[in-house]
Length: 358
Image (tube, rainbow, N blue to C red):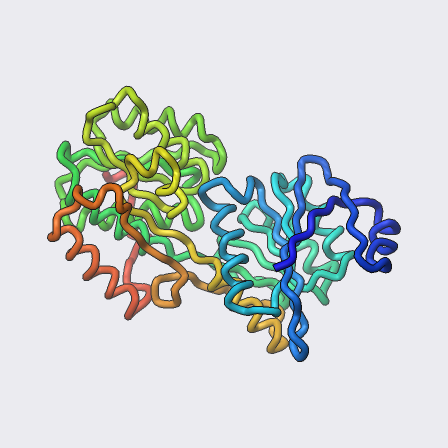
């Protein structure tokens, strides 16, 4: 794999650079880091150039890292067919500049990873009809050159809900979400349904920080839920890492308070190694492979690409450091549901959950 680091200069300098063999330049967009990942294209198939725009960083242990990791995996699975670049820390107001730079550099696909980029993507899709665009999460069908993607994360929430409902000792369980929308809404409601399936008497505390990135607020909410009796907690989006840190706080040293995660990267953190019992991850390689395959077939958008256990859009793992906490009965209950998801998608009616009735 060849890795290049570069920043944006004016286009005239960029085109000059491309004309020179072995030329590598560095420059920057304000509050942006751009990297290029590429593989050598093999003869018959031209590599598709993909640009990724994210609001946080590629190592945020959550939403943005999951997409970056998915691109890396898809690149390995489709050798010679993908090269990609990314721009980090792109608020929607800044992302348009980055996207237009990518369009000027003849990228085939531009992904705005987050529903906050919807308006920008739709605007640019009209301006550049020859380029494929994508954003998620969204279940809506976009224009002919726009893909959407939707993790059916009620499935991952349901698995974690089963663990939480069977493992809790206090019968109090906490969920910290960002906003009540998109895949976070599906995850939270799937979590509730999983708990109710195995422990209908459990008290479920649901709160939203109002932000995808406010780690401090997520931590404050987690502390509040723990003080109210929660001994198993979970959360959605990148802000959830703040809640995980609260769960592992020294204040609760020796107490059986644990976390069930939405991203496997959380297990690899010091806090997660100590407190995250299990986690699921979004395997965005499934989305990237879908976009690449359709693009090569001449389909440039107009579809929503789902992610679920059925199409390997999710992965699930236990924390080996905490293997003794889960009984064989709990593992069996989780495995039965997981096997069902892998055989048949769309079995969880997540939108029946009313948080106000909990």
